[in-house]
Amino acid sequence: DGGITQSPKYLFRKEGQNVTLSCEQNLNHDAMYWYRQDPGQGLRLIYYSQIVNDFQKGDIAEGYSVSREKKESFPLTVTSAQKNPTAFYLCASNRDHSNQPQHFGDGTRLSIL
Amino acid sequence: GENVEQHPSTLSVQEGDSAVIKCTYSDSASNYFPWYKQELGKGPQLIIDIRSNVGEKKDQRIAVTLNKTAKHFSLHITETQPEDSAVYFCAASGGYQKVTFGTGTKLQVIP
Image 1 (tube, chains in turn blue, red):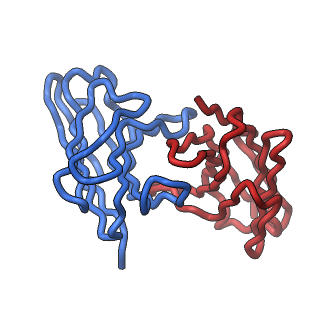
Image 2 (cartoon, rainbow over the protein chains, first blue to last red; image 1 turned 180 degrees about the vertical axis):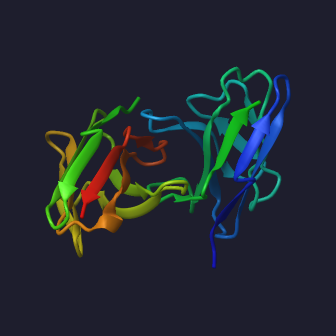
């Protein structure tokens, strides 16, 4: 079955640490996205990538970094500069960043120790 | 940029009744309006979408209506069942612009 796999499902971060969230898709989609979900605030875009080796900042990119070295993979690093990282993080993809449905993974819940 | 407002934030209905969730958008250039269902601990899943050249679309018990003049669109679920209980998100986008999501509606279907 094609889909998006996010790992780990739960992640804990100590103060001052960077952590990396994994996102892999086997849908052959060109575009990939990272969203942050907080209660009552819907989904907010962190970063997106339309093609390998290219990515753009979304609405809340500060304190986060990404890479897109392979079409299938779009890892998100939550850096120590992100002062309020506790949230549910969702990765998504679609065919070509046009008006196409996004396919989502099942998320990673990040908490601070 | 685009702003999407979604109401209500919570909705309780008796099993078998209908549920309606409404969204408004601000950017007249938006032309694609998907609806997603998110179950607890899962990622959102597309349940229905509509493009601006269509006023209504149905898929079994689910329908979406779009009023481009008023810039609002609605999700209608008929004959609700307990498995319809979830959080529903509307969204809007135009061309190659990013998708803007509403803040979600938590639907509870009471058996």
